Image 1 (cartoon, rainbow, N blue to C red):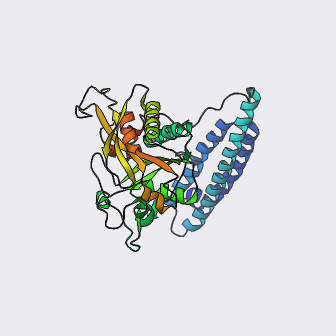
Image 2: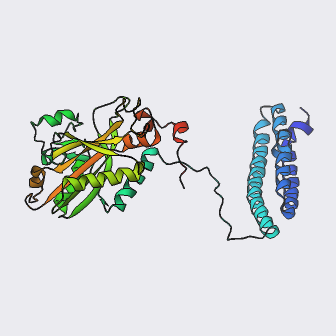
Length: 356
């Protein structure tokens, strides 16, 4: 190597640093973002001046390389730091230029700079259901998802040997045999009545858990239960509330019917059917040609439940009805598989209204 190309690298680096500082001052004076980028490319680009010095470093001898490398590295760090500072200043220059060039109208609406997301269909239908319940005068009440056997079963007229427990495959906590994941939101009914006195008009939505999984069942799903307790409450009141509620959600032409059925926490009890939302009662594949869809259960609150919460069943009466929120979403949005609601598929979820 000649002295001009290798041993002179530290001298060349020093001279280049002086030249860079002069150009830096000119660019700063110009307040031009384009000039900043041009300066960056001229020194740090593939054919830049600092890059050329780094290329020449390979021609140095083993003895020359440490001193030359150190001087070039110091130059490179100096250039990079100065360019980075200048880029930050350039952003302020551009903003200042725009503010001076364009009048600023603070009354203009802000345009969202990021894409808007969408609400989950279960959230959408839950909001709609609660809106209608509030319109009917119900208060939303919440409760624990991990609860004691007493609230989930015993106080609801299901003692430990009751066969109705077999209908609900339950997740029990391994270390606490009396603790479980609630199988229905009816546990909120007990919590509420133990803490409040009649009259009550309560709706309780939430997640529930059962050991079950197929196209129409998932281990975790959402339920909503409504109940009323007061003096003189009758089965006719319950039928009227259910009918008004379903018409508000699915349309004024929809019909409901009740079929006698057994639930341990109500007496008498009934299955709640809704006119098929797809065929309007004419009969189709969805309703298995019956014209009706089973959506939930209902009935008059059992005296044993009132006894468990220290209510006098000779004075008070009440009704309760509940159904699956996910099932409602399936009917409302005409879904074929319940599992679509929990797979997190962006393509599927993107079909629902944007969050606003």
